[in-house]
Length: 102
Image 1 (cartoon, helix red, strand yellow):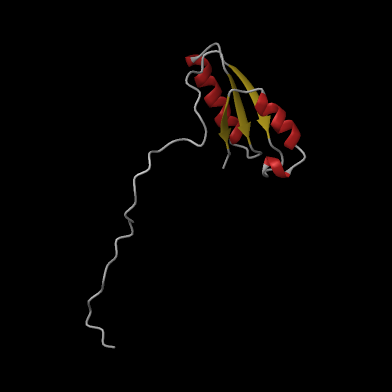
Image 2: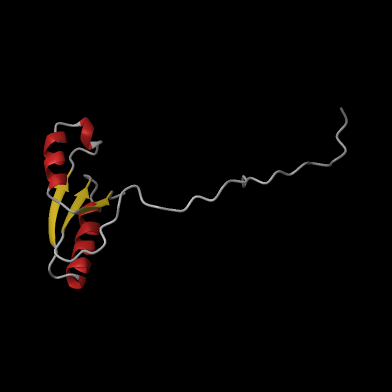
């Protein structure tokens, strides 16, 4: 087989049916009067990120409440002894903001 210096170039973009973007769960339509869960891992930047988010949201929506959940050590919550505590916490919030402090 002889190489004549010609190469076939393939486009990495596949032809696909467009699928509308949507979140993995239904979104809260309004934050007024809601309880926002602030979930973080054990990385040192996570509390700083959530503190900034909380401060900003509190200015925009003074009537919202916040509930924190910190996961120590840095592992999947369902793989730890915190599973029951986490499931109870989730029942008490309307929506969750998650921060991984990497």
